[in-house]
Image (cartoon, rainbow, N blue to C red; front, side, top):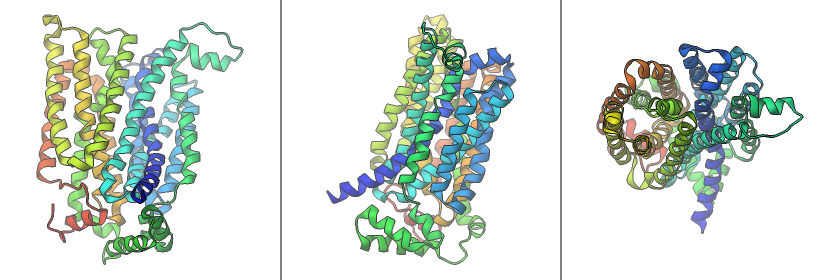
Length: 470
């Protein structure tokens, strides 16, 4: 009973922080259902369409770049509140934008919020989590992202259907947002969870590890005591964190100059950016367009995208339940192998599917298999690894560096996918994604240690060379 109570409180903290992941997912995926309508309304060419998709990612890059510094300076909680405010402003602004320029600016504001939560939410969860449950707890953030994806796909599908029904209203804005220009409703509905996030953050405490680094151990001790339901354990956790956070020459600059710490930072950068060139965001952003290129109608393409979102959620639930039991690396080996197989089969379909008379349902099955393999591996593991690889004193900045590379990769794939589909065709594009899986597998096998079940301080000792266990 005592263990359940402790886990229940930490689970509550994780779920609150993970709402940021839901907003991340919704804001990222909602764009897929609005591209055609926005392009038609504002007369966008292919490059401008790519900018419409990619502009939020430029905001994310900026958000990531400042999130670590801001969270180290202000605290994790205040940065989460700031990101919630940015999401709220972005949602309302997008719904009421009457020029492409203003729409882009409000998308960039939302993108800054995405960048911030992508760093601070998993970092906060990692810092309050009990070690033996940390992988699953941080994976709740990834689960929330997938629920956000699914929520966006369902919202797009339902609002599109709603816009075609007959209804009477005296409100010109309601008619404009939910019928005449339904893309406004798709983007604007994000305000509801964003405002909820802003309010509920008030109910959670600051990260105890951040408090210790900021020389506030008494407050940290009280939070640890609540997490572990023991004053003695709370005091012991503070002492454990102090042993690593107060060692000499451990300023952020010194740690970045230490080869032992620079190594995991560079590895984090590598796996973050490589993961974006393995196809997952191309499917999430351009799934409907890819299905349309296979001869599937626009309405059916959105319906297929809902199935992709559903499999993404269910698979992430499975990953959440087994990530601490099987470990991070085994999930990656299994999942990335499946990604390679499915990507090659998708490429085969676009070359020979029509000639062999293979129906579009088979393509959907291949995409669902790919999404399953992705969600069980790199999507579930990446934020867990990035949130636990670095020392307490440098975690914010190190995660910003890795997150910056992740969002640069995401921006590039968002911008390049239309070009790749046009010049390499779907077959060549997915074959390229399959090839990019190989260096990711090599890095995970050769250089990344298994971190399941270890405390953040034990992982720090490993990288510092004071612990021979891998």
